[in-house]
Length: 157
Image 1 (spheres, rainbow, N blue to C red):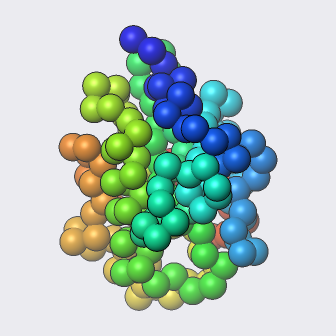
Image 2: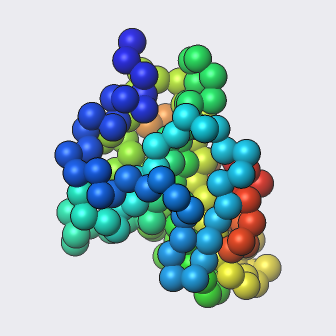
């Protein structure tokens, strides 16, 4: 079976949407320390993204090879300001839906939706944890995980 990273990379017609450096949007950055080295990161806002410019989206799709048979798929939304749980959940769901088009069900996946924001009230963080806000990717359902801007992504994975 072809590696998931190669399979997805081959579906990207324009490499301008692929990220090789840090993940940063509007003053919010997430560190990639301890994330598997074999990875592919797609910036859904850049030219070449598999999404149309008018489609709802999250910021990034991360696909990483964890073991010979298991891959990590994470959708990420970065916001410098306050967390708006409903808006972020909507964007993460759109990212998961886009990922479903790129990633076949036949691969073993560990799925993680992640919100990365600046200062956030406990009320909004608790809204993220409500079961109604689960994000579905193929048959995997996960609640969004939250980390602060500037932290390492591994805390949410």
